[in-house]
Amino acid sequence: MSVDQRRRIDVDRHAFLAYSVRCPFCDTPVGPRNVTREHLDVPPNPPYAATVQCPKCKEIFEVRFTDSPR
Ligand SMILES: [Zn+2]
Image (cartoon, rainbow, N blue to C red; front, side, top):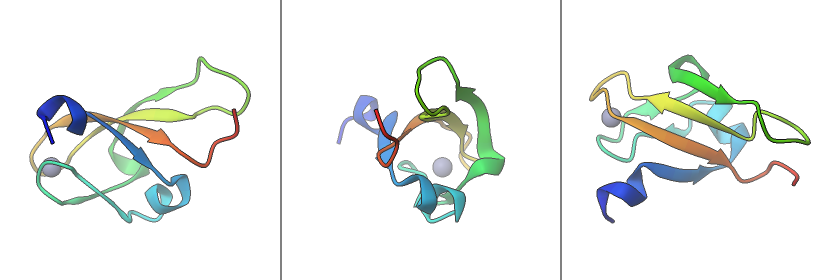
């Protein structure tokens, strides 16, 4: 995967809330505590995505929640 692809990953929201999602750069578990910005601007049920900063390698990437209704 290219770096650009790793900057935006699709995740299951429940897995994210349970810290079962891993940083695509260094494999460290990330979750709600690592969110730097929630994307609240798109209906119907925000947040549908969030910007996350890895606590270990400090990379910033966007997670999109695949279980969110559109
Ligand atoms: Zn990382």
